[in-house]
Length: 89
Image 1 (cartoon, rainbow, N blue to C red):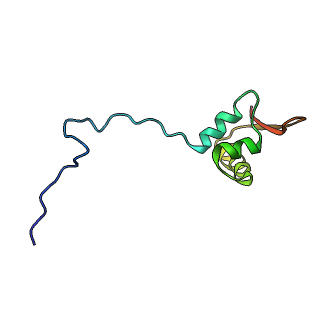
Image 2 (spheres, helix red, strand yellow):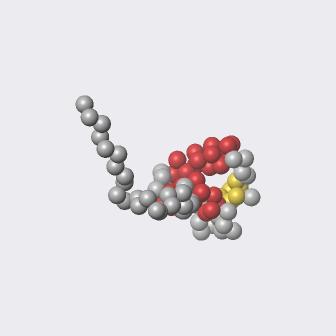
Image 3 (cartoon, one colour):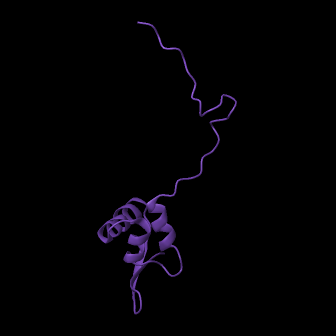
């Protein structure tokens, strides 16, 4: 059985530097942290819409990933127009 000839990837020219830095990936956890750190905070509904998660997943991510694993402090207040609003403090 003959060995296949070594081929190069035609989409990657040899003179192109493939170690160039890539754009940072924005995670859903980062989206939640950004929304919660705003002065106006975020409701569960707003977080669910931004991440595409269900409301119980957003609550679980706040409790598990943000509070327990990252050690962030999340406060919640009941507002008349918006309902329960969560903020990073």
